Each structure stands twice: as structure tokens, then as C-alpha cells.
Image 1 (tube, rainbow, N blue to C red):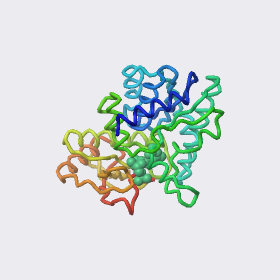
Image 2: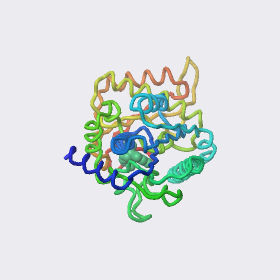
Image 3: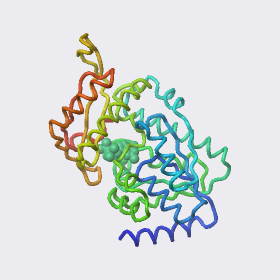
Image 4: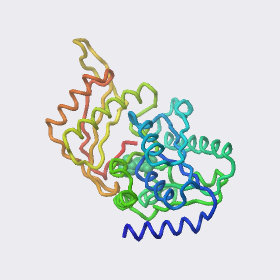
Length: 313
Ligand code: XMP
């Protein structure tokens, strides 16, 4: 199916785009990476990719994106630093859907500004996949979470048309297509990461201080899971908005509770908790609380989807 899919998609993309140009927002995630690789194969330099760094990425992620996609794959890739703007817009906002909407809107604003400066753009491409469409619902009442990578953009920006070559695929199929296109394994097998980034993993107001705490803790967690060689579909840390009393350096501390989440899933529509061995968990908790000044307690989320969603917000 993969070879067929790639051939048919390339043909369709070529027929649609002809000699025109295409703009793609690259997030570093699997979907937009595979979308970029597919388009690159079909139309080469007629594709321009823009990476909007919203400051809500994981540790070292922005640098990795530039090195993999620009230096490694040779994509025509432009990075826009928009951290301050996003943090400004998110100031004081605590409602999860409001956060998502603000991030989506700010993303559009940044993208639109780039579009104006870049001149005429004929087509916009997006790495939308099938579960994004299903979970974003057909009307307001169906929406579980508004994914900012669905809809939105085309109505605001003056593009000739929208290209979404992966919209009939599930995550596993997207990965197969990516591997068949020759993308590096570590890019294709990456865990899913939400478009709004760490903003949906910080409960309450988003601040630079909280982002930095979460980045450090999440990095330790991910590194230790990799070291332990566990095969888990998605695992990440969440900074709860709650502080509790603990002890640091022999004195009373009042610091955040961090939650660890790890799930097994096929497509993200349903998920089961991963049963990480207690020794591994204990080691992770010790490393996090010792090294991240600001987190003195860690809890482990053992809720399946449903009733919970995978990401907390
Ligand atoms: P939830 O949290 O809804 O997430 O159970 C299902 C899967 O989707 C990821 N996720 C997103 N992916 N844009 C995305 O591209 C988003 O806005 C978004 N929100 C959640 C989540 O990490 C999980 O893998």
C-alpha cells in the first residue's frame, strides 16, 4: 500500500501544483516531516518550509529540527523566532481551550505576516492526518480539543489552495510512508507531539519559568526511558499547577508537582497506560527532584483513554 500511496500522491501533487510554489509549516513532528518529504520528492525546490518556533518546544528541539531538515535533508527551511510573542499572548490565560485557540490564532498571525513578506504563495500544505479530522469534530459540540493544525489557516491567508496529502492516513501509515521516503528513523519513529507544544502540558498560566522547569524534567524522563530500553508509544511529563510542601537541602520547600504520563496506543484515539517498572520510575523521580529545583514531588498518571485524553489539556 505504501509504494502505491507514495506514487499516487506524488502524481496528484505534481498535477495540482504544476510550476507553482507551495508553503508548508513544519513543526518537527512526524506528520509535517513526512508531508515535507513527500512534497520535496514531488516538487523539490518549489516547496518552502517555515518553522515557527513558538517557544513551547521540548529541550534542544528547535536546534534538532534545523539540523535534521535544513542541513540533513536539504529542505528550503526558514525559522521564525516567535517565543516572546506567544508568551505575551498567553499571559494570564488558564483555560485549556482558550490557550489552544490563542496559540492557533498567533500561529496564523505569524504565518500570515511571513506570507505577506514572502509575496505570492500559491498553495499551502499541511500534515493533517485522519485522527486530527475526526477528533476536531464536525461542529463545535463534537470538539474534544481544537487541534490548531486543522482548518483555520486557509480561510485567513490568501492561498490558491490547500494540499493535505496525509489526511486519509493513520499515524502508523504515516510512519511507513516516511521510512519508505528515506527519512531518518529517529524522525519517523518520534513520539507524537502536539502542535501547541508544552502549553498543553502546563496546567494553568504558561510562563517561561514553568516552561524551563518542564523542559528539564521532561528531558530527564525521556532520557531515562530511552536508557531503560522501554518501547512506549508516547511518554512525557506534565507540570501540574499545584505546589506542595517538601524538603530541599534539609529545609522546607514549596514546589510544583510533576506528573509522568506514558501510554501505549496505535493511533492515539484510545490508549492504555504503559506499566513502567517501579525501579525505573523511582530512578526517574530521584533524578528529577534532585536536578530540577522547583519540582519536589512526582506522580504517575495511570488513566487510560478514555476516560482521560493522552495530553492533559
Ligand atoms: P489527546 O490528548 O487528544 O491526543 O488524547 C491524542 C494524540 O494527539 C496528540 N495531540 C495533538 N496533536 N495537534 C496535534 O498534532 C494538537 O493540537 C494535539 N493535541 C494533542 C497527543 O499528543 C496524542 O498523541
